Image 1: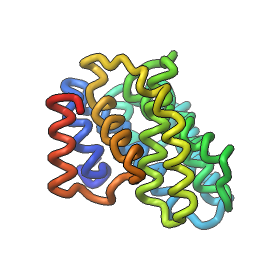
Image 2: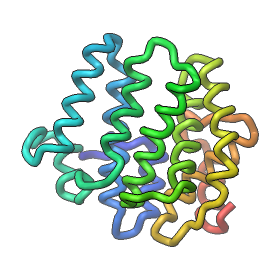
Image 3: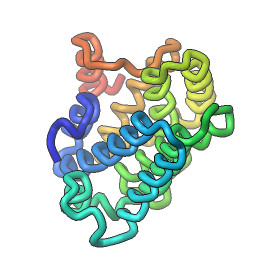
Length: 215
């Protein structure tokens, strides 16, 4: 697995995970692989087949050997993380559904966002606030990258409804990268913005401030 398997933001967040950083990088790279399927596959049936391959990988101890992200997940223990199947289900919504309505958007957020945060936290039984925080993050990320303006607005609207539940968070030091990710998303959601497409100097300073002072 190389640095190109991670977005700049994912790399920065993983760097705050301490000794768990390799595991975090592997999970972010897994999310990026699923995103690539959703972004580059125009035929729903083919997208389902590609996602089914990843579903087989997480339930099989051999399949995918030699694929860099698969090898990294197995080497770091990320392959045993909770939430991986949910992430696949969440990305399948974007890859397969021709139009994403409110129910599909909720399914995407719960699967991709809730699953990713459970995986990063290594929490088989996650508190509601952790799941909601992951959903807010996923909706913020979608709003910043989708080309459909109406879908971006719907994602932001849904994220705002989840903020009260996510704000009940009790972040521990081990969850520092997730706290940073959620706080970045929360600030933008309140301002009606989605995730940026790159890391500007201003955004990097925001991230640094949140990491240091929590807001």
